[in-house]
Image (cartoon, rainbow, N blue to C red; front, side):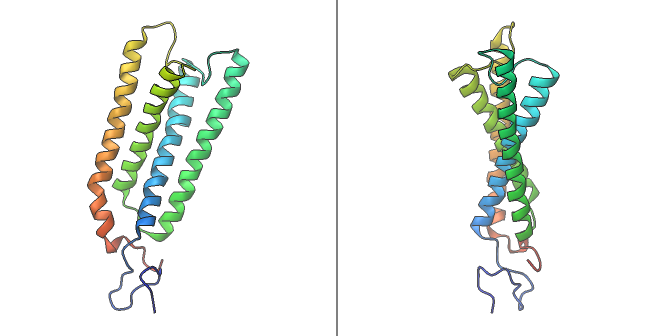
Amino acid sequence: MPTPSSPARDADHGAGPAPSRTVGRRLVLSGFLFGCGIAGSVIDLFIFHLLLQWHHFYDLSTTTVALLADGLFHGATWLITVWGLFMFADVRREIAVPWMRWAGAVLTGVGFFQLFDGIVFHKVLGIHQIRYGVDLLVYDVVWILSAVLLLLVGLVLLRRTRAAALRSPAARRPGG
């Protein structure tokens, strides 16, 4: 006989129990980690470090040290990206993915990472700036405001999809 936490289908109703809160939290965490990783590895590495060549992760030493720091930083952000994807794959085996909720978590992760980078790495620690040889005020304002906007949009999506995620018995994967 299936228990409330059992993945077996309920023979009487044709659907399993509603997804547990743990699965819902793992879904959000997977999107958040993926968003943080993408912000660090794709947005920061590919756009600001490689394409525009505006800065390195650590600009307070030699080019060799800066490139080593870039490699370590982006290795770490790729690990975070992959961690988020593995967690997502695990969650996807248990439930049908509420894509808007996951997208909200991804946007929250991107916004959080950009805000953390802009405040902690750029301003508090000063290990790099967005760009050198320019008036930083405009760059800092755009960086911080875009991060806050992404974070807020992600949080709004998470809030709007929370109630549906908690009550949706149809979110359970058939046969899962």
